[in-house]
Length: 295
Image 1 (cartoon, rainbow, N blue to C red):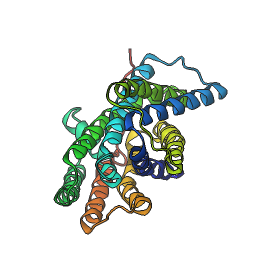
Image 2: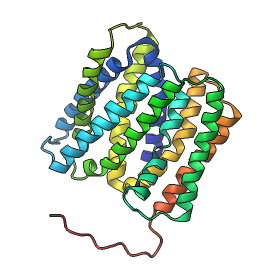
Image 3: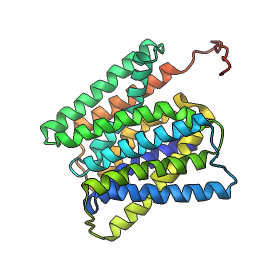
Image 4: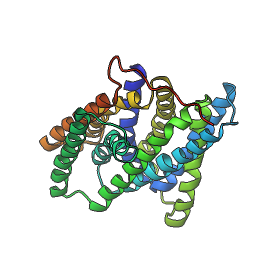
């Protein structure tokens, strides 16, 4: 419970700190440097703990996918988008990830979803529609919103790959390595499209350090550890807290507008996420299928 609530709080706060960063620094450059620093710290700590970077083939594959899709694509899209959209908008869009994971499992992988899960997907869609309808009428930037949507799709792919990365130990080493993957990819695009123009301020420095150490390093390690301990489905249940926390933190620290449509939509999205996760839990007294040995 502590790990789950801690992860949700750290993950949700990342949107507010990211918004503070992109106001004063080029987004891709700042994000690449953040991942470089977080990755080096993570690898150093992992080596001190006796962990090895001799990973299994499945771990290397999942680490590469996770680094590319979550760090480079998901966070890259969101950092660029938050030049034009509020942190609360990015948090709300990203919070629909468990709904997309449930939808992908149902449509792509043929996983059975009980009526409660289907209702949860419908509720999540309704909640997003309520919020985004109000935001679009209030002038939210369509380009920024589109980038946030691309980002959450990339996060969904990363989440579907996390299971392979969290098995077999060496979790902190994996966290550090997948951050270096994201840093390298983002550095290429930063060199191509950005110039070094930074408005140095105490808020920028504090936000960068916080984003690097807390949402960047600590939250990722907690998420991998949580998945390894209780599984992806049960761990994803804690995501139903993210819409509340993301909007609340942005309103508290950035004075972002919070209307009745936002509150209603966030409640509906959170309920939909919770319903989907409950529906994916195995029914009581249902025997688990026998595991098939892998070749």
